[in-house]
Image (cartoon, rainbow, N blue to C red; front, side, top):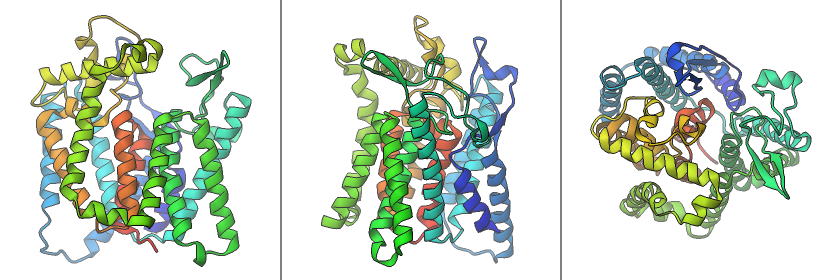
Length: 421
């Protein structure tokens, strides 16, 4: 039963069919914020059943005396987040909502990590999801609006190319719609496609001789469609992430890249720390022509600088979970636009700003423990971790939006439970 729920969960992961609960605490300066709004998604309902079935299976097993330090660190992290929500956050209800969401995601990850899903079935369902997402994305791009009809039930929202606030790109003086499919933003769609694309591609290459012609055709079609949709998202970071993933697979075949990284763990960890620091510091030295020419870059640089100022003021405990977005306007001199009502586009800086040094160090400790463990998993999960890490340097949806959070949790948990041929 748990496996059936998991496969169903995988299929609906990139959808956003949900019910929102709008309360007074969900607005900022009178503007409603999706990031603060408690929302129950279809995937949340399936997730709760998965967690319940996992806990039931755990109760049936005899307890072991095996000591696992990560459980102690995780418990400390939960206790700190609870303290942070009640005694640090100004908007306590928004913080508690985020705390409950994090608790759900951790429990979901533990439940999935204890499953033993079939590799071929897992890849087949991910391919099916990528096919319908890609077809929708290409379709939306061609007609320059949402498709409507039955796709509403998968979470597609109504929009046109000229809808205010819609993501678009300029081509020969015209604005063209960037496709959303069933996801909240083209960047999220690009991130989802870049990760699943690499996973399916790795499986196809590694198991080419053992697959029949129909499965080769099916997986091949999903890869081609996924690549086409990925290009149409015009998500530059997703393009870089997908390309870096392909390069890592190539190097894995040529020089056994994962083994070389494993032999230099300290350097690998140091490069991660350095990348986080550079991603925060570099915007302070952005050339003026970049800031003047590209509005999106100007907005991101402004948010990073403002968030750093906020961190310095709230260094020890942060602003409280889910509260940085409500506090950022207090640290900026002028009202530059609606972009200040979104989280900073760097999940590491975002976590630091909301949980302070104490919470961030606990987060880093859990991350280090996971990196140490991931070398025991198939190499593809190391490469996906690197992809997710890069995405986190340039966007916030892995920490703030349902589909990004689930993408992170699922592939992290599968690295414990899935065996690659």
